[in-house]
Image (cartoon, rainbow, N blue to C red):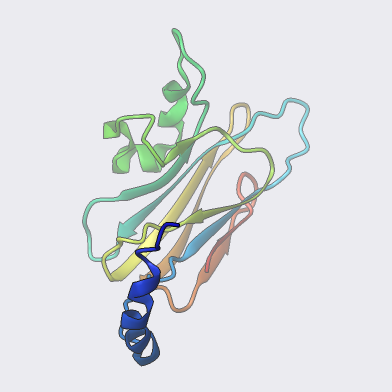
Length: 167
């Protein structure tokens, strides 16, 4: 019979648990991004990117980037990331892609949840979400956010993006 090394420690932790002195992980905020269904003859899934910009100035931090990650050859999927113009100028062109944990495939119409990084410094930011679609349009939505997030915010696009919400 083996003895557990975890169970003997429980009596030692009980007073700390009762007193509330153990650190609990902060609940990270979540960004909700809606890609609307667009009724057109030739529909292509949009490239979508989300990033945070500190209001006081500083480097932009990419949260997610959805593009055709599998397309390779003479015209790889990264070729059209420059169509996400605002993000591209803010730092997208200098990113090494695919970025582990940030890059992903394009998404079909629907609503998607993306967690904000847990290691964000407290302060005021603007969340920006940009979408561009082949034979379609381009759209940028901005939502102000204060970290730690106590009160969410939202904004909505009119064509390529639907609701963008922080909770």
